Image 1: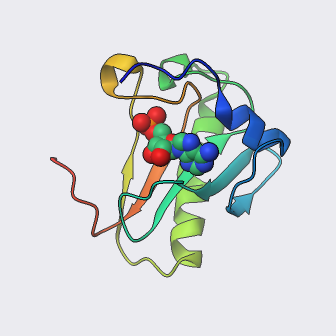
Image 2: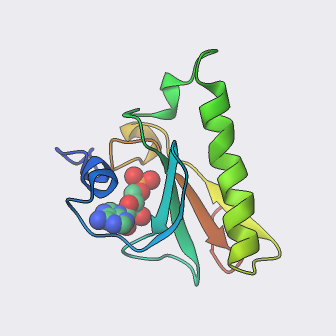
Length: 113
Ligand code: AMP
């Protein structure tokens, strides 16, 4: 599936689109996926506009690290013991929403890994 023509996550960040928020800092936002693929399926995103994880560089590694820190905190909040983290990178990698997002999924998620 190609990239959606619009970055809908920017509208979630601005509040223009509703979301079920579970965690927020000045740099990070996390909310429930609208079509969950597991009992718990949460998306963790940076508030700044970054299209894909290919935009990681030495200036923003701390921000990318915050996605993982948020995942740990949210997993504790949600009472998840073990969990799965998944990121699709670019259209060819299966990414559909053109804004960096880390999928946090409960262990019942069936991946092909
Ligand atoms: P990806 O394929 O990695 O780009 O994943 C995009 C994810 O965003 C999918 O799991 C969608 O279900 C989810 N999604 C799309 N629109 C929304 C929305 N408005 N609120 C929450 N999740 C969404």
